Length: 110
Image 1 (cartoon, helix red, strand yellow):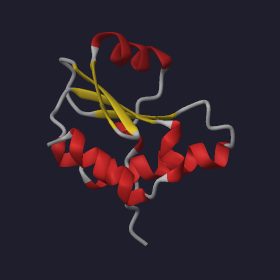
Image 2 (image 1 turned 180 degrees about the vertical axis):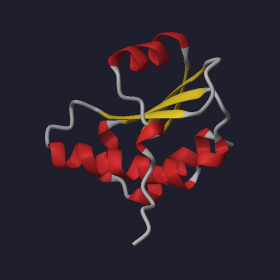
Image 3 (image 1 turned 90 degrees about the vertical axis):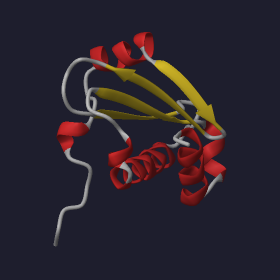
Image 4 (image 1 turned 30 degrees about the vertical axis):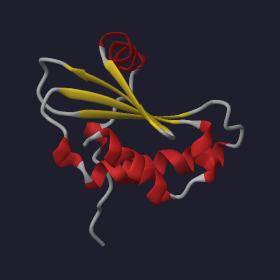
């Protein structure tokens, strides 16, 4: 079976990387989704995925993050080299479907 997941090399992991994007980057919001973008001099693209801590059940938080990873995997070509992007799913996203979240993603990149 072919592995179609988002490669681990493209995932932001350290607290330092997340803080850099939050402090130096710009923010855009659309409905249930907020993105933080920062363009650095380093080659390659990196993504971070967060869900609101007000979502108490970890299963629900993880489901939203899985959906976001899948959306990004299918749309990697929309990002330029050197870009670090964090996707933040708001609590209201729990009541939405995958396709609603996908529509919010599309609005942010029009």
